[in-house]
Every structure is written in C-alpha cells, then in structure tokens.
Length: 283
Ligand code: AMP
Image 1 (cartoon, rainbow, N blue to C red):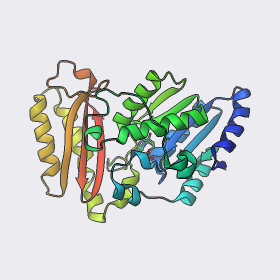
Image 2 (cartoon, protein in one colour):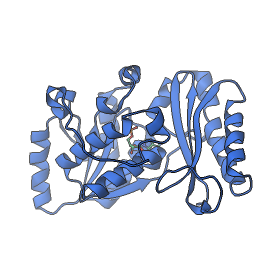
Image 3 (cartoon, rainbow, N blue to C red):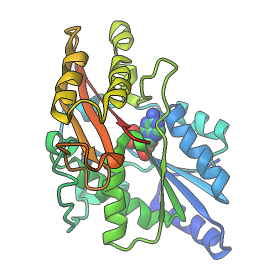
C-alpha cells in the first residue's frame, strides 16, 4: 500500500492511473477503522482496479469541539488494517493540507430538508461540513465509484444530492451496515463505551428490529412512542430523536400509505457517547 500525505503527490500518482483508464474505488473515512470500513474497502476492491481510502478527521463537520477532540485516532493501527485488507492507496492529509490558512472552501448548495431533520437538526452545520470535505476529496481522487455505509443513511442522501446537484461524475455505492454479533452497529464511537454501556448498547438494534415487526400494524405515532419508551426503559439511555421517514427525502411519515419507502432512524445517548442507527422497515 502506498501512503500519500499531500494533494500534489496523490493527484500526480492517480493521474497516471487515470490515463491508463484504470477504475478507482474510493472509501472516505475518519479512521479508527473497524470491520464496517474494511467491508467497504473489500467491496471497492472487487469492483475497481485500484482502491483508495482516505483518513481525515474533518474538523469542519464537528459542531462540538469536545467530540472532535475525543475522536479516536490511531493511524499506525489503521495503516496495518488497510494493508492487510489489500487497500492500494491511503491518503491521510493534515488539516493544513486540506484547509490551507484554516479556510475551507465555501459551498454554495442548498440541501432542502435533507440537512435540517434528524442529524441535521441536532448537529447544525454537520452535513455542510461533510459535503465540503467529500467534494474536495472527489476533486482530488476523481473516483469512478465511491462507497458509503447505510449506517449513516442521512449522510448517504446528502452525498447523493451533492453529486447530483454539482454533476460530479462518480457512482455512489451504498453498503449495508455491518454489526457486531450482538447486533450493535459497528462504529468508531463504540470504543468510548464503558463495559456496562457496551452491554446495554445492542438494545438500540433490538428495538429497531421490533419496530420493523410492528411496522404497518401499529399507527406511526404510537410505534415511535413505543420505541422511545423501550430504549429508555432501563434508565441508561436517552433518545435524542426517533423518526420514521421516507428514504428519499427523509421527511417524517405520519401513516403507512407509502410504507415501502419507510426507514426508522434513531440517535441515542449512552452516557456521553452518542450512537446512531437505522433500519429499513419493508425491505
Ligand atoms: P466514518 O469513518 O465513521 O466517517 O465512516 C466512513 C464510512 O464508513 C462511511 O461511509 C460510513 O457510513 C461507513 N461505516 C461506518 N460504520 C459502518 C458500519 N458499521 N457498516 C457499514 N458502513 C459503515
């Protein structure tokens, strides 16, 4: 695996590959890698000539300074995992490489409701920050395909909107959420859970599975209220939101009229750690 730290070096290297018509698969990450990330890398490897992974803890997408400071970082460990998985190229720039003079390029793009509900509502500016960095990374890598996890379903919708609106020539490939054996969605944030919090955390997925069973039977508002009660009943978790939305526009649905598009989303605080998860209710 070749590691690049600067834009000049990686663009020079990739330009040559692009001239040879090699397809490039791209997996943008913030590091602290786990099996979820590695699954995206493997899928990219199976569909492209070359796979590039980026590791960049993007300060612009954090609306909470403490969350940014506490974000786990271990580049040496990540490097080893990527090499073992057969990733071809790692791009791991410093902040000043991505944002010279601390100045991210402004992005003049409206996201409609996509960045105003759920994660957008509780993390103002988050998706704008994600869009800024992904646009910049696409401009550096020029990938044929880019891989994103459905774990961050709303992010996927924002990226699709970005690519469509700016006519960026890349195929966005959504990938299923990878889970621990007990159902907890893998996340870099899981390593911040205490032992007892870690034992409690799978409840989120278990409740989402129950919601899937009851979807279409219980009325939507009743089902949402039931889910919040179930997640919070042991007194250890606090639900920030629990929504059932349509998967394209992410607008809350009030009934089951267009149930085939319904997805349940939640964000839950377990101690100081904020976990998100979702489930497609009719697929
Ligand atoms: P992150 O490093 O958390 O920004 O994630 C980088 C990419 O990995 C994003 O596209 C995430 O959606 C994806 N990802 C993170 N966790 C998982 C998971 N458990 N399953 C599938 N994809 C994931």
